[in-house]
Amino acid sequence: MSQARNHCDAESKNRAMWDEVAPVHLRAYGEVAKLREGREFLDDIELREVGDVKGKSLLHLQCHIGTDTLAWARRGATATGVDFSGESIACARQLAKELDLSATFIHANIYDVRSVHDERYDIVYTSKGVLCWLRDLPEWGRIIAHYLNPGGFFYLMESHPVIMALEEEQTGNLAFRYPYFHKDEPTRWPAGDHDYADGTYIRQNESAEWEWSVSDIVNALIDAGLQLEFVNEYEKLFFQMFPSMTIDDGGWYRLPQYSSKLPLLLTLRARKPA
Ligand SMILES: C[S@@+](CC[C@H](N)C(=O)[O-])C[C@H]1O[C@@H](n2cnc3c(N)ncnc32)[C@H](O)[C@@H]1O
Image (cartoon, rainbow, N blue to C red; front, side, top):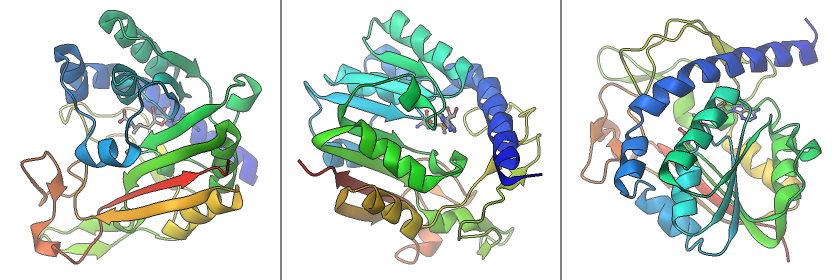
């Protein structure tokens, strides 16, 4: 199979998987319940690192069912979410309507969105489980730069690329199982996985993921003309990636056994020159 057809096949399998789980997540995401109760769920790190969004325009790439998009809208941003899963966008629009929150949701692959949406934004934001679904990170960097106003910034919060290479063994020790460095062929995952938000739900669709290293991420943004303002690494994560993780008072998952030995979370901010 040619590289382009291979990528296209992986993307369409991923889209089917996200379409499948979107309604499951609308029922199971704790964020949905918190939105309904008017409670904050954006975390302390992103609130501090993104800062005040009141009166700013914000583009959320890979918004899924729109929970984070709507949380930023509730904080005063003029928010737009993009996702290639039609079911996810339908859930996001349903949620916005139910909660009477104003946000725009665009159904598009981020690699095609420039042909259907022509706006510029103060902030481009993406977070929590996004990069592994992307086939081309240099192009992702160019899309981000395209959508930013001069002087605007991009913010990323993501699982640290190093932990994507690890698997926990029965002993509780972590072992290197998967590639760290990018390769063109994605890692394929069969159907039958338990969903991360509703553990009782078994996914019917297979999926495919690409690995991206820290240097791939940083260089994609630099090559697109953005200036890095910070890169941060943390010893806590937004979901229970490994069975032996414990949850702290702030709702972050930690690995006590590997305390001070392993980064779990990566954040960065990069600005388009004014
Ligand atoms: C883990 S979710 C997004 C994370 C979000 N923080 C959340 O949990 O609600 C990943 C999303 O990326 C979307 N996605 C994957 N590849 C995409 C692409 N090429 N263009 C647009 N959306 C994409 C999927 O449809 C899915 O909704």
